[in-house]
Image (cartoon, rainbow, N blue to C red; front, side, top):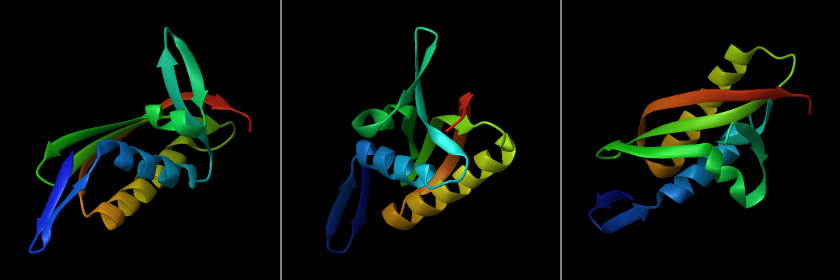
Length: 115
């Protein structure tokens, strides 16, 4: 759990909340079909409440986190460009909404699909 302390008290942000914000920010990016979860060699497209299983949040220091995303991208798009757009959008959204700094964002492309 991430804590931010100011003169009025302490704000605690659960990692599940950060995962939800990350999911919503990533899904706004062009070219992403959804987040993925790999189980026993099978990649599953996640939807709804399970979608945050495709996000891993790790505390790396005081007010600093690292995020790892497992994504499925749209067929026919430039993978590098989409990954960079996801990174930029997630970084901006997390840092603006939570006040936490991102030390690292890793994008793991698990598959390519047509929408």
